[in-house]
Length: 190
Image (cartoon, rainbow, N blue to C red):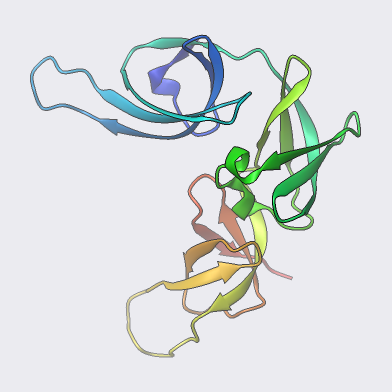
């Protein structure tokens, strides 16, 4: 059983009889006495790709989804779908932009650590690794000595992901990005 205290992005559970994955959630604590903590949760249905929003009281328990995980490889994007291959069965599968729900921005050639999530033998979702390496394609030029405080500047990667990076980065550099919230982790050396 999964308790609300175990909620995090990527957790799969049975919600109202259907398999879902947590895409995002926020926690709010009412100020009234006796008020339960509320988890405002955004789910994605694992079979249909539909996005559901709901508020759940703390302490509720949910069943885990009975599923398999296989290593997978990203193949290519044809403009409307993202194509993958199951590394164990060598079956190819694809997801539309709606089914990818923003995770497509973390995909580039050579990304490692992808997992295909199978429910009843059918690939239902793709799970990203905790971090990915990408190349900065656009960013503002560095202004040396402009401030004593560390400031961030906007940048764009080869997949179109926009994020804030340190001012010393230049276009063409490889960086590591956290796939849970899309923030810069570090410059890739070598």
